[in-house]
Amino acid sequence: MTKRSFLILHGWQNHRPEDHWQHWLADRLTELGHEVTYPQLPDPDDPDLEVWLTELARHLDGPAAGTERVVVAHSLSVLLWLHAVARELPELAGVDRVLLVSPPSGSVLVRYPEVKGFAFAGNDFGWLDGRPLPHPTRLVAGDDDPYLPEGVQAAYGDPLGLTADLLPGAAHLDLDAGYGSWPSALEWCLDERTRFRVR
Image 1 (cartoon, rainbow, N blue to C red):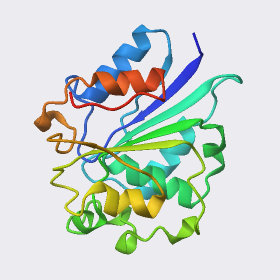
Image 2: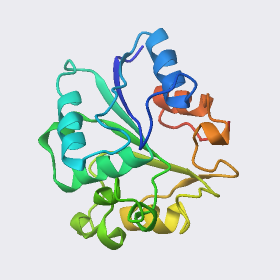
Image 3: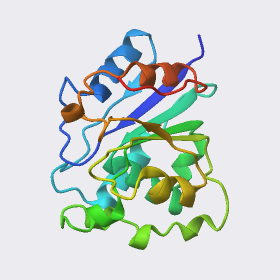
C-alpha cells in the first residue's frame, strides 16, 4: 500500500460534526492505516484568513520522505488553499495532489463580513499569470450549489485552468445535501483517477 498523508480542511461554520462526509472520510482513511490530520481551524464562525494561513502552514509541516501528501479542502478552505498558492507558501512544496470541493463564489463571500476577506476581488486569479496550479488538482461541485450562482466552471474552473467535475443535485456537498458519507471522495483519496459521483 502506498504510504499517504492526508490533510482535510473544513469550511466556514464547520465544527467538524461527526456525520459530515469529511469526518467520515477521516475515519475511513485512518482505519485503512493512513496518516490523517483533520484539524479544527480557529474561530470557524468568524475566521481570520491570516490565522488560517498560519494553521495551514503548520499542518503541512512534517510528513516523512516517501509519503504521498494529499490535501482535501471543502468550501471556504478552497479559498484558503488558493490564497496559500497565490502567496507561494513554501510549505506547499511537499503536497502531491489536491481536491477542491464546493468553493463559494467571491460574490457570495463579500456579502458576509465574517468571510469577505477570503474572497479574491472579482474572482481575479491573475497571480497565476497563465501558469497551471502547482499541484495536480481536481475541482468538484454541485450543479445547483446555492453558494456558487455563477457555476463552478465559470467562477473557478476556467480562471484556474481546470475542468470541474459537476455533480447533479449535489448542492454544496454538505450535510444539508445529504453528504454524511461520500464514497467517491474516499476512492479518489486512494486513486486519483477516480471519477466523482453523487452520493
